Every structure is written in structure tokens, then in C-alpha cells.
Length: 270
Ligand SMILES: [Zn+2]
Image (cartoon, rainbow, N blue to C red; front, side):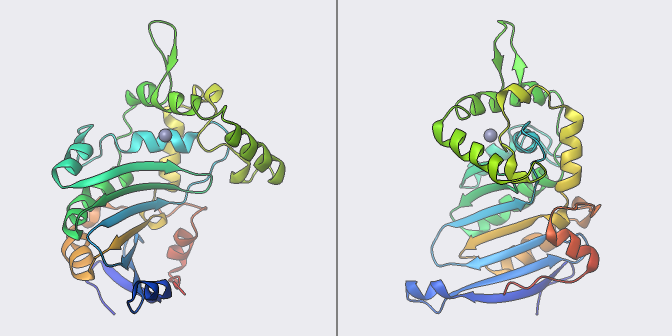
């Protein structure tokens, strides 16, 4: 049993596949923030590289791509690191790479990798602040999501991204099939990236409301894999983040662990 004032060790298992690498198995340990419910999973895997995933269970409710629009706005400035572009510059200075976000029908994930747990540890408070406390500047909406420029052409980062995807045969086949397989209220019946014809209908308020509903710390799991230690990531990094950075409303009805945090019954890894 560990941890400190803020985090409690919930569970630990040995992932047997690690034996294939000649070891005794990879140790996977889950921790939970006692106050806000944020969960952290450390996977000890030999090697220099460490990978970081911040996983948010999100729910596609239509084909507009609200979750995707939010994903693009999230990393463009936060409450404690308000300058747009700071996160990218910070990562470059700390030997981190691979910053990316991916939106799926039932979750959104933010990823990064670094050459050591110390580099991941430096990045973690900054990255988490962007995910949990983003500025969501309304002025970024046209540039990042949808706009009509002075030439009368449609544009926006998400618009251009989806324009290059939505006519691809595999996307058409998969999403036509999913719409036939699942009822309309299922997230799998919707196109998580958003159809270009609908992106213009996303409002700033919808994005803010979506963040408020799903991006609660008690709904979020951080997974770090590599040569990581509890002593560094939990004790030296996470325990030292001021508690008021992660406030929880605990109102999501989608993420299972948010519901469990309300009931205070920790989930087992087994
Ligand atoms: Zn995108």
C-alpha cells in the first residue's frame, strides 16, 4: 500500500506477457487521487522510452464532431499555461515527442513519449493542465474547426482533416456499416471526426459544455508505460501538483470510474 497524501494505490497486477521478454512479467499498478478521482496507471516496461496517454471517456452523440473540435482546442493554452504553443515548445525543450490527440466514438486520448521518466514527469503537470483546464479560446474556433476565408473558401484544421478522410472508401464502408449495426443513441452510430457539412454548426458553448460534462478528473485515466517508478511519478510529480488544479464536479454519466468515484468503490485491475 502506498502513496502519499493525495494518491492511494488501488491495485497491482503482473502482466504475464512480460515473460516473453525474458522477465518475470510487467508490473501494472493503478493509483487514484483521493479527492478528485483522477486515476494513474503505471506500467513498468524495460527500455529507455516512456509513453504517456491521457484517456478521457467521451461520447459521440451526433455527426457534428464536437468531441473532435474540442480535442483540437484543448492543447492551445490552459489556465496555468495560457500561451498558445507553450505546450509544443515545452515538449521540445524537454526531449518529448509525439504529441497528438485522437477522437474515437467512445473516448478521446492525448499521447506523448519521452526518453525518460524524468522528461515525462516534467511534461505531466503541463499536459494535464491543458486537458483539464483548457482556455477554449473562442477566437481559436474558426482557425481550428471551421471558417470561410476572405476568398470565400471553406477551411479550418478540423475541416481540412475531415475533408481528406470522409470520402475514403474504408471510412465510408465502416461508418455506413456502424450506422446499420447500432441504434441512433449509440456512440458507435456516429462519425466521431465530424462530417465537413456539419462542422460549421458547432458552437463554442457546445464545446465548453462538452468539456464540462466529460473532462472531469474523476473521468480521466493517465497511463504511463516504460521505466517508470512510483517514487518519481507519484511522489515527486503528482503529489506536488497543487490540489486546486484538479477540481471535480463528478457529473459525467458516461465514464464508469466517475460513477464509481461517487460511490467510492475502487475498480480492480483484475
Ligand atoms: Zn483532428
